Image (tube, rainbow, N blue to C red; front, side, top):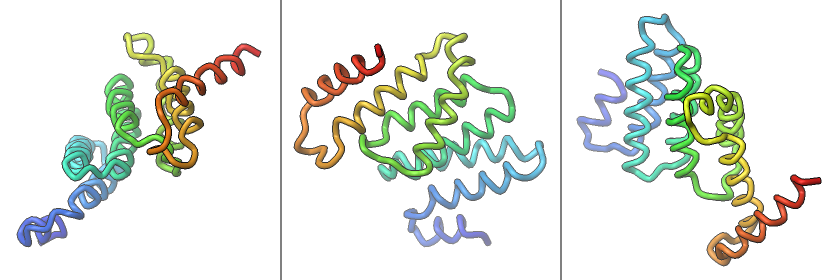
Length: 159
């Protein structure tokens, strides 16, 4: 009996996203034959995290999935999973997983633009604008602050 079985039998599902993510990472570190099962575990982790509104766990699992898909040359799929998780991440979150996810998106930019995906630069700028616009108390800010941030950022980018 493994930790996943124990969680399911007890009816306690709080740790399911992390357990599935760990299972996916272990399987991904093994042989290529285990990559399909690793992908399935990471997708399940993302699904569980979404149901629990655990955006940071979802982002970590999406980052791990994107790295696995990159190894397999599946850049558009990696981009889609990672950008979807980043879009659901609240503005102002700055952590190692977020930074790594943005790095991976930067690597994916040329491959996804060729197949019609949105520009990673635009997405990253949008995320950075949100972080700049909501540095301290996001609940007290309005979209006016975001627009002001866009204007300032455009002025900076022109110089």
